[in-house]
Amino acid sequence: MKDLMKSFDMTVKYLKEKLDAIPEIAIILGSGLGNLANLIENKMEIPYEDIPDFPRTTVAGHEGKLIYGTLSGRNILAMKGRFHFYEGYRMDEVVYPIRVFKCMGIENIIVTNAAGGINTSFSPGDLMLITDHIGLFCENPLRGENLDDLGPRFPDMSAAYDRDLQKLALDCASRLNIDLKQGVYSYCKGPSFETPAEIKALRILGADAVGMSTVPEVITANHMGMKVLGISCITNMAAGILDQPLSHEEVMETGKMAEEKFSALVSEIVANWK
Ligand code: HPA
Image (cartoon, rainbow, N blue to C red; front, side):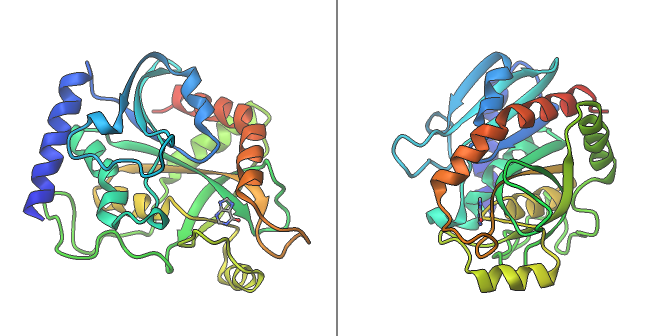
């Protein structure tokens, strides 16, 4: 664990030397939601492979870079391409960037993702404000020796998604006439999609949407006391709701369709960040 702290120091030093200021907000861009990067001005792109001790993206041709610049006039650092547990990364690799962000001095994070809709009042293309999550099926990224310098052994998760930021997101959506849904995001490990029986079980547990990311990052951000806002793009109805198979193509296509709305909402939220 001492070595992990040493790695953070190396990575943070490299990034701080590259950036001319500490970004106010980090933004993780979910699958199919990378278009927001086009709205970032004065950008500097930093490929993951150039960053000391940063995890490497596994799939050749899969984008992996940090994008530093201004969005709505605010200094931000976006992550295009995240690390999923299903790709084979260890949990400490999945959450490495979040710890680096906090060690750099970034206190705020917007976590976004593509998700399957479990709540039958949702439709593909909807955006959902994450009000809470179910991470019971997720290996906890904090397992093992606690990194006392970063946060407590038993972090509180009773308001994992900041309430003031949720209100801000709802206000911004209403100004933009975006019907922002709200709900509980449930994590599943993937990479296979869930079965209809699993989706029924998750609905009974209180889930409104399901996806293969976000929960590890949000637990880690909470451990370190960061403020978290989460937004899902409902890219498909979860397994068994419609009489049709699920596919990654559908996830990516619907993500593209919702991209403009998503980018407008995130830009408005960043512009009004307190
Ligand atoms: N299940 C899990 N992850 C997902 C889904 C889904 O239906 N859609 C997008 N990511």
